Structure formats: structure tokens, C-alpha cells
Image (tube, rainbow, N blue to C red; front, top):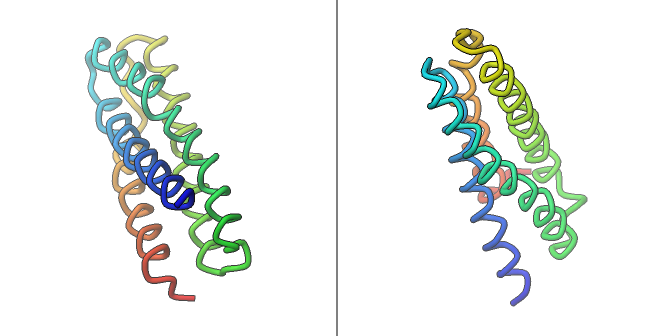
Length: 132
């Protein structure tokens, strides 16, 4: 029963994190400083805490399920690292954009939302199907 509660918390945190990451990717491309501030506040209030919960509950689930040896989990962790690193990069870039005023966002910002969503598709497929 505890496993299911930890899994539910993990899934809620993942959904919150992905929503925050997509918001950061899309909202960070807007030119208005007030929008960028709002996106950064959403990062601090939602995405960053959710990512912390994901990184706490994920390993707990892996230990509880005795899944550390599973190849699908190792593949999943690659994608989790990618979107975690993307979050750090988006956060740092949004801080710089807010500090520097009306400077346009870098060109790679347009790929952040699709990269997030493609990573999530891969993660969900690996978790549900467990192909290897």
C-alpha cells in the first residue's frame, strides 16, 4: 500500500514538473518582462519543488520495487537526466533574461518544449511497456 502512495506522489510530481517545464519553455520566449517574471515564479513555486519530489520518490520506488537492475530503468534515467538538465538550463537562462531586460531568448528555446514532451513519451513508454 505504501508503494502505491509513493507512486501516486511521484506521478503527481512528474505531471507538475512537466507542466512547469513546458510553461518555462513557452513563456520564456515571450518578450514582456512581466510574463518572464511570472514564468520564473512558477518555476520556483511549482517546477523546482516538483523536480525535487520526483528525484526523492523515484529512487524510493526503484528500491521498493527492486528495479535497479532493470535495463528499462537505466534507459529511463537517461531521459530523466536530460529533462532535469534542461530544467536547470531554462532556469538559468530565464534568470539572465529577466536581469538583462528585453533581450530575446536564445534560439534553442524553441526546442525545449518538444524535447520535454518527447522525453516524457519515451519515459512513459519505458515505464509501461518495459521493453527490455
